[in-house]
Length: 170
Length: 320
Image (cartoon, rainbow over all chains, first blue to last red; front, side):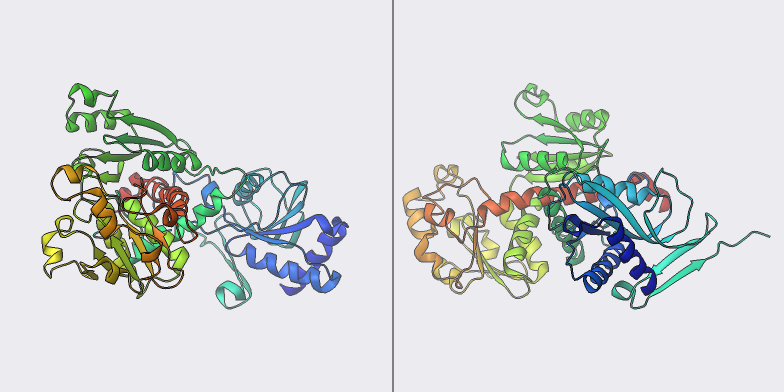
């Protein structure tokens, strides 16, 4: 995981040489921890402090009428102007793409970024929307009913990616 | 999922757990951030309808709920007492049936009769929010006061809050008590004996509450003060000798503010009678949180609307 994040850090810097207009935004609850690690990686390698933000997408979910209880909304924190910045959105697992759609809708409520790019630790496929990642830690082929869980020290006390295979009916 | 929240209506906070109150306050924090964005609108309640049914005068509460509903992209319809069928003598029962037929998802209602929202809640499938009923309760005000105090003072455990004025007729005082006491605050009430419930004066106040007939002693060392509006019609009812005397004996001025803990804030639910229950220098001074209360009110009401109207009650019933 450390090596994958280091590589993504390098790729982000190579893609946009002008680091002064770059910012990294993590999606709560695990993308924000990964985003902080990416910032730290870039600071260590380039000596540049990249602005860091966190966004909660609950109010932008497209399934709010299809869940029972209202899900918990966490506080977003974008402590910089997004206008004309290149934003790198960070999440742990890319699956259907619906979370990313919601996050993009949330980000444009803060202003008009120059570009939004996407970095994910795991891409497990099965997109339901026309969305792809610019930076991927690892592509993991899965069946649609499998479950991929990323655990991070900051949230779960350990760094680990787990793949739970769906039970195949015999 | 929100494990602490399974309520269908917000009628009063008197039977709420501390966890439920904290859920609303925590969600309100996130809503304050939404309101600070360049585009103050999130799509969470798109396609939902919020009916504002105010059968009693109100500006700030109604506008606050309206802004809250719009900030979550709900459709909003207003019904006021004047200019509606209520003026033509329609009963509350028939109005409730009509509102039901109109198909609102949330019904925010204010009514002069204590208990009216309970009556309506039993007769509608909409989620009902009590926006003030008679002298009974005003839960969203209690929650926004708790939110504002928590932002200013931090954890309310052991904090002492003075509530000064007409306690007897105040639904705000009741809702403040029922919201602040579960969060660990201690309340000192002070006001003219004619405007305090007899049982509360005579040794049987609610848990966590004391009555202090001397306003100066009530304020001594307090961590915050909530000043209540004096309803002028109380003087006509013979409960007060004169407004001038009330102002001299109970009014909060800069001198009295000095009795509280250094920097302790003052709040008022509005609308204020400046120069009666609160001096203008206090109301607009650096320790006044009165404008903050108005701003926070929108966020707290967004949290309530979100908790009641996001998610599907039908799905919950399926699960049960």
